[in-house]
Image 1 (cartoon, helix red, strand yellow):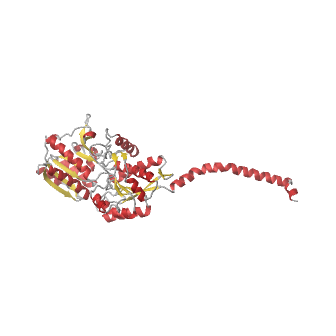
Image 2: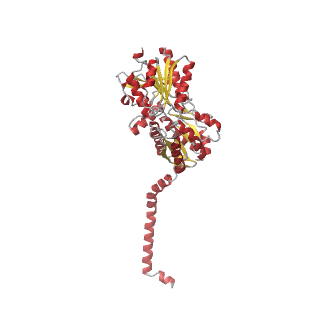
Image 3: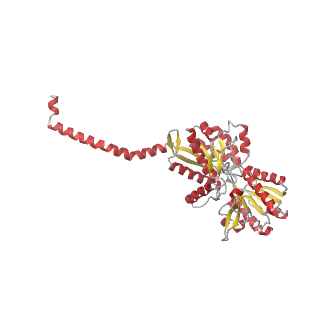
Length: 447
């Protein structure tokens, strides 16, 4: 009975139809798999990114451009397949929190609240760039230690970081400084002052500095150096971070016969005012130090031709000034200009932010894990040839900087605004010697 039914013509017709449908379905399987595979792969990758947090002050050029530099590194790494975590390649994703820590009037508490919100909400595997204001960095150290998030800070410069680190290295082991601290650029300025003294006989100096931890430390190192090397101090004047009139200090310098004004300042508004007042008053003293609007590659437009002869320190090398004798600075800044249309405005720390992402990626691959303790162990063994030289950390998790060889340490540079043969102002590296492209020139009104 069953056999007879199977052999009926209508049953054979149904059987052939079923086989045809099955064949079509089987033929579609590879096509469906082909079309869906990229989407599935992208969805899978997107669901497992390595999260890098950037809690910083976007009000400042340091914060904005540090973030831009970090994004360049992230894009390059992702374009090459991401970071190998164990046996899996994973992309990097940046999450940002504007702490407003660089804005006059923003309290440390408010900046810290934004910092913690990023950590608790976004749950980053690591942090780069970090606090702008040194006071915020110091306050955030306990926060970072509490949540055990490896942090590669690239802005805040205060030496108090390592002082606090030493009090409990096991607790603060998650914190690293990839960039310089205030002692490094201060040392570069001090040694440039030695050249001014030796070459031109200058020996009278007036200090004006921002009343902030990093700036006070910066100016303090130079002050101590000058006292030990025979400089006469005309004045040592701090100003609040929201100051917008420096005429009194400039008058004091002028009346006291200062031959050098050492200025340390990073708040954009106050720095612009100072630069304009200095230029308008024509104080017969050469200006040296770190004042972002004057150090910026756009200074000729934003401040004016009066920037000629001013000396500035860029820390570390490659932050905004391409150096012929340090090719990696040229390569990085070409990438920055190609992507964003201009060189970085801030003559500090951008190269550190770029390097920090690569240092972190390298540590992740060495650790084979995103476990914070394993990451810390890998970061402590960092030996990376970056934009600003060779980056290694000392026992206090501070990147080692020197003034002699970028193959051994990170380096910075001092430059002077000078006219080229065509009469245009340009930034000329003058110290240290192995990076120099010209000699220091004294303003003609001082001769």
